[in-house]
Length: 443
Image 1: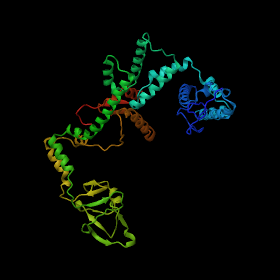
Image 2: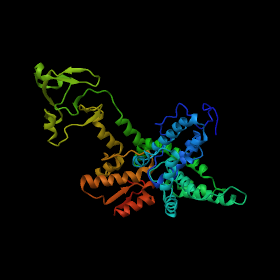
Image 3: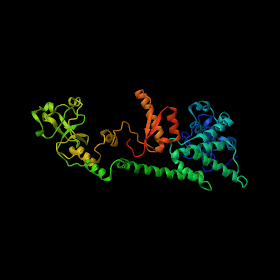
Image 4: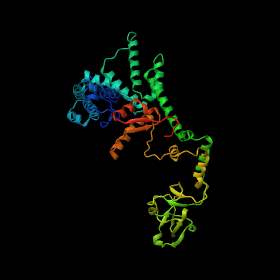
């Protein structure tokens, strides 16, 4: 008989205020034989921490306590039973909801799911050997592999650490290191080669720390590189003097007077009535208001015609756009398309750029078009270079579904992410021809 104070923290029938029957004490939910070993180990760890492990192992039975503690034992037993029910799938709950003893339920689950056979160990061993990083981060890839290692270790016998077995245990740890390095993406091939040259070989934890550092450095360098891509690309085709002159011209903003075409509006608008001819005053009911970016609203008072280059007049935006001709040179600013007056420095931009590039007047316009910026059709923003293949697959599928066409040729620069074995296999399997550009040539 056990005769201890039930209020003692070490008493097996003591329940803390936080030990509610509705608690979900572990994050793993038992669904099948595949995750039984993980669920079982997590439950045993948590119940041991709560000093309730004896209720499922059968070492803490009701007959060990005096009669006055019998009801307290039932209360704790029911609490442990509900903890088990809260961590199994709804299908399994139906089979244990009428049970009254936590130990019996634990034993029944063990008989149903603890089927350690060669097929499960084989599947684990194969998954460990074939798992790869893919689009995952180093941290996510390591966590997934470690979970497989832990489950495998729980199913196979382990060796005690003795002077005779120490060398073999070291060999097993080296095998884990090789498995971890084998699944890395090709962009980590350099640091992987460095690790393999180290003697003695680093532990998996040391290798993981080195790779996390390398990954963070790549993120920083990628951000810095992206900010300089445009400048470096332009410098491939222009001298420093030409580049600086072009950028100065593009960045000029002298606050010249202009008439603006509101994007999305049905009429051209101006704040200067002197630019209009055939002016008529609009009734208050027809004029309406224009909402300005400063959240103020001003009324539309007059309507008229405005002459632009060539003596032509503009009336309605939709009508003029259907002609398909360029009527004036403008510049997008603050969501507006600004029409610049004759004689402005910005309107002479084409002539000045042509002047600063005058040493090659025989160059075809198509060549300059290729050298300057293209408007992107679709842009993918990537956090990591390893996302390249995933986004490429998504884009090719989108083209096939939305436009009913198959991608036949894929042209890229010489980025290493486009030449990985996974990318090459994907393109080859889908019959897509991969072409790469020559260095320092127009794309």
